[in-house]
Image (tube, rainbow, N blue to C red; front, side, top):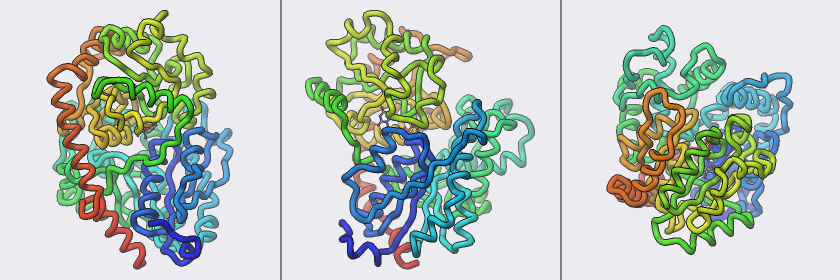
Length: 483
Ligand code: UDP
């Protein structure tokens, strides 16, 4: 379904806004595209501009956008005096959103009649402006239902628990859900005195203001967490808005550079299910020591691989790549290859391909030669992996990724993880060698692959006409058209 230019002015209109970072922009933009192409709405996607990220600009300003999907760039804001150098990611991002929303009211008014605004979890400042303008606001959770259950429960934990959550003697018992191990707690709640916690609590406490919460998951992937949020009295009493699982929405448009084309051509020459793809999200990096051990482990395993390599975290700023994802030159400078063990590239050239900074992840995961994915377990990467039927090796780094990895291993059965001793900072080459071999050749790896293929089928069904996620979005779209 594509809207003709003449129809756009009279078509029900929804605005969507995402906080900065490809991990939020990608699913919200795909969601916006689905509203236009599958459900006949006119969508304005408000882009909070940051110091340009190549990947972000390429995605949002692609020439192939459907008519009826407009991208509105909000003016760049100067954060230099507002955000300290050591501010962490959620603090930085929240201040950026707050400043960019200085013009939100006039931007929304300029768009004419709006039937709804959809925001992600960290744009909750929009509730106030939209209340004034009588625009219903829906929240879109770009991560799992399990994470949403945790987030909705945080205000209760904040009232009832004294001291740090990381000092609790036992795992956190979420009402009706799997327990959350203390070591898996997300970074933002590990220090309640840090601004990260304050911002996180601020945003999640405002979730009940939403007219509904969309989640990028589906019924068969997370039946327990979705059931608990809908039915457990702790959640119903909050009160929790209506939940709409609409996923797995993964990016559909992936502009290819010349090196991306080479990468896919290389994959064409490899056997089915044989290649391990290693990419740690838009911002993930390894320490110098871990990079060395990883390279040796990979080489010793003898497995085929495509590895997205970035400057080590102790050389580049830890989260540098989060805000300028895909901007290989800015982040890596071409220097990242210097941190690989001497001779690595030469010795592995028959079986491996090392790419700098960024690869076309969905195209790689959809390729029949890809047999396993070493992932930091960001939610988009996790959904892309299962939607393509590729089993995962969990390498969680930051945010809620440890929770995702545990859930995907223990509740879903699609992921293997390295064995890590308590307090161990670097995972050694022999464990990495074992993990890589197991993923491709071992029984555990094969069981995960079977599960991943099942999930691929289930994901396809839920997104098709008559499937639960499709119908959930269709129901919402009808509601918005009638508003
Ligand atoms: N991505 C990519 N190529 C890369 C690394 C990442 O296309 O080399 C994309 C990936 O497909 C996913 C997103 O970046 O859509 C990362 O999102 P995720 O939620 O997994 O992690 P985050 O970056 O938010 O930590």
